[in-house]
Image (tube, rainbow, N blue to C red; front, side):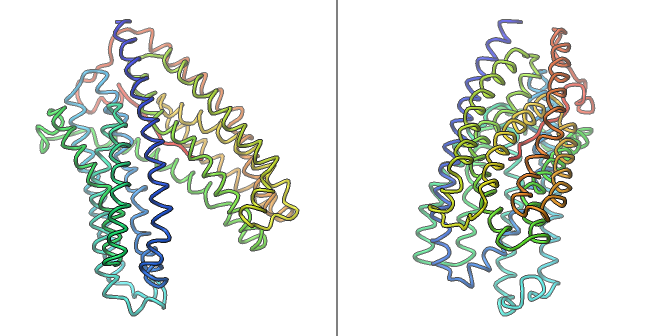
Length: 470
């Protein structure tokens, strides 16, 4: 038993390293695509149609919320079922996830189409686009169709993550990004239309996911063998996890937008713009952290399923050391040279804003610290606890901002972010971590493998995961 656990732990470590490398390469390809696409699409469509393109593709941004319904629970459930050797539960979860995703796509797509067809264009998109009604209707239909396909394709990503095979997701994404660059040049120079560009940027990434579905079904034929049979009990398990992910997503939205909202209502335009630019840059530095942490919670979930607490301890210590060094380096640069960088390289007016950059430097270190603990707790069956702490932290941030912004403007809002990331998480998260490790250690003392008699007993072999925020 111990030898099997060590062997699986070594395999898990290898897959995690591959997933991190794949995630980094995928993000680099994605950044290259964005850097090329923004100016290319803008100049090929022209200012008017580019604005319309942004409005229409805003529909597709809803995909991140729609996918919360089934995907995270599927990753969690498959990891647990795979550890228990219960292939019928994994198949039941996959069937339920596809059905929930299809239902979400139909409902969401119908609402969008009804809104665009019934609400006057000038009310929905603005008076300047009232003459583009026919084009808007056609383009919306294409966007909704792609949204539905993306939702369904996202189920494949979640299933692969449950089997610790995220490297295939990232490799497919990298290939799709490179193909998008080639096709985008072709479309932009020969037939620049909104539909053509949407099909390239949002349609091409679906192709490798479909290929992954074929590979997944060939390697594990039991997953789709009885696709239309019942999956009683799996829906509630998926939605329970999905709702918790939704709560974390709400917290992430609050983090990204509340600072600008409070400053826009309680301070000046200059203060709002300065805060927004510095925060966006800090978030960009945080994208490096997500390269490591995004593949981490499924790996921790798998380790919990196999009761390998020592692997969790080793991996957590190693990743914690690396992220601490990185966050301190970024924080030090922000504190010592942030004002000079933004003033001279980005040509942003930073007069008198030295304290703002010092506070953001401290906030980055604190947020990476809390971020890693959030992700670790997510992988250790504490998703709802994480969701509640994230929401409470963001409510504190909003309260502190309303108190401090009238006094110190953008600096006060930055201080609110820092204070909220320390006030609650700094003392609560270590306690939650200790409790989770103690609970996992107690369960590890039981050497019998987890079992479940049917999909309704999924709670016996799983609880909850989640993604990260920064």
